[in-house]
Amino acid sequence: MRSGAKVGIVGGVFALVLGGVGYGAYNILDGLGDSGVGGGTSTAADSSEVRSGPVTGEEIADTSKKFLAAWAEGDAAVAAALTNNKADAETALTGYSDTAHVTKAVITPGEAAGSTVPYTVKATVSYKGTTKSWSYASKLTVVRGLTTGRPLVDWKPSVIHPDLAKGESLETGESSTASIEALDRNGQVLTKEEYPSLGGILDELRNKYGEKAGGTTGIETWINSANADGADKTLLTLVKGKSGKLQTTIDAKIQAAAERGVKKFAEASVAAVEPSTGAIRAIANNRGDGFDAARKGKVAPGSTMKIITAAMIIQNGLGSANGPVKCPSSVPWLGVTFHNLNNFSMPSATLKTAFARSCNTAFIKPVLPLGDKRDTALGNEAKQYFGIGQNWQSGIVTVDGSVPASQDAETAASFIGQGKIEMNPLNMASVTATAVKGQFLQPYIVPKDLDNRTFAVASPLPPGVSSQLTEMLRYTATAPEGTATEAMANVRGDKGAKTGSAEVDGHATSDSWFTGFSNDLAAAALVQSGGHGGDAAGPVVAEVLRAGP
Image 1 (spheres, rainbow, N blue to C red):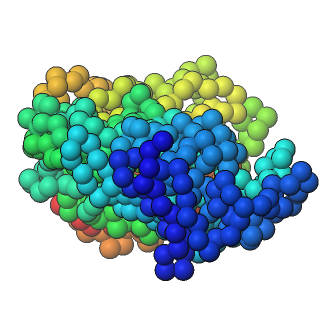
Image 2: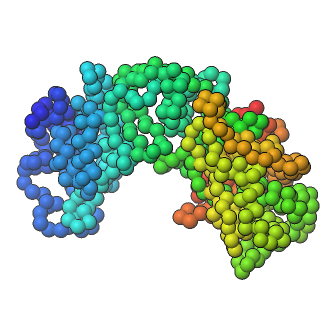
Image 3: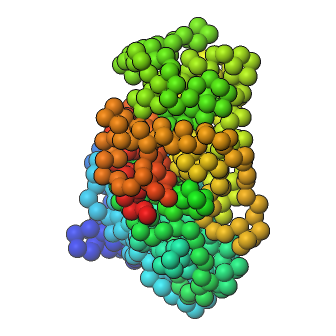
């Protein structure tokens, strides 16, 4: 049995020290009475009585104390038995010493908030004679067992480390990928600390291009990704490898603005591209789940989709920017009635003014004459001219949108960005860039000749279509009745925009969408459950565009 572990009272709270060459099996829980692991008398939670109802404060303190003590002693079996998922917990807790090579740790609990107990971990990681300190904070929650009624730690991998997710594990050793020093377009170093939204992107770039950039491996502690397309995440560097320099298309100034912008709202994501080249200038997220929705999201884009619908209408001879359209308060489509927001109507509208006010009916009614082609027309337009669904090879993992064929009422819903359509901010920034450029240029973050990737291509928009779309976008961002005018008021130069709201199952309120351009920069944002487009996503995009050229 390995020895050297101690548990004692430190500063009024208990600390758990893992020492020596490994983990010991004895404890000196002075002052803790019978709450120590393996000793004392049975508590109420240990009796044969099956309790019900919320866990009590005493149960929370007792269970968390026992669990952390057992973890500290390296007794994975005892600690795991105090959770509601013994098998998974024991594997993870065993790996903490065996594969992560943690040889010493002090775990200091904080004050419980309800049934959740926070704690800090000050650990020492040792690998082949190299030792380094490692500090982080995490938390656990105590719940009542469904069948036993016992108070148990609600097992999640994040109990071990806050960044650890299901199917992932901690490991220390020689890194499998070479280190990189990622640079922005002007040679400025990009770090996770300064630009937190780039964390996952920098990990992906390292995994994919570290060796090509001339980097060498080091000794690190990392999280093994559970996703085949994901990147391992480095948590601690014991010995640095040589960093190869990797040039990216990110603009540090615009990225900083994107980071500021998403902080304005919870569940916000934004992406920016350069219309003249397709270069990605910024990607940022502010989400509780850590998901990179800006480039991987798949949700309905709402009325921002009217950019592609307008192009389809113009190209099929069903209307023009300054041509008249009907904008009634509602319109029937194969037995389903579609409405405008608050049932407004426009008695003498053009496609441009209907676009500016985001009249739904004006973008549904004109498509009826397409007959059998209407179920596939929008998808064909999106793919052939806007590059949607064309398998983008940007240098990082991206989801490049989906506009599938539809039928019946779903077809009408797709024209206003609902139904089966799936987009993310990077997709919609590219759509806006295509509209004003007149040609789809695939977004990318590193040059294609770095690894001889094949970029997606699409046909140029027919003559006159781009100019009409640009006119409509400009009007929406500047006209008194434009839904984007208020958000774009402080954006300088040549500018245009489109707002959107999308109803999504499970969201308390509609998702807020906004896409716009200013000079040679296009950006799009999504704020989930953010309401109308101009209210939440609009200020995020404006923040980014103001940092552009």
